[in-house]
Image (cartoon, rainbow, N blue to C red):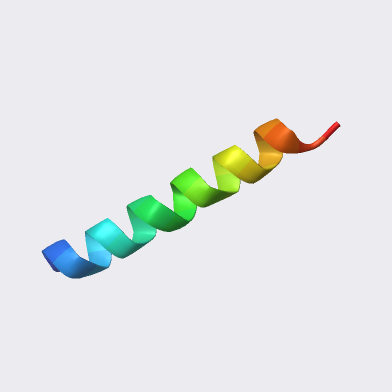
Length: 24
């Protein structure tokens, strides 16, 4: 896995966790 792919996956995971935290 390349660094750019890892960074992209990490950002996607962070976006998902933030979205889940905002869910009621």
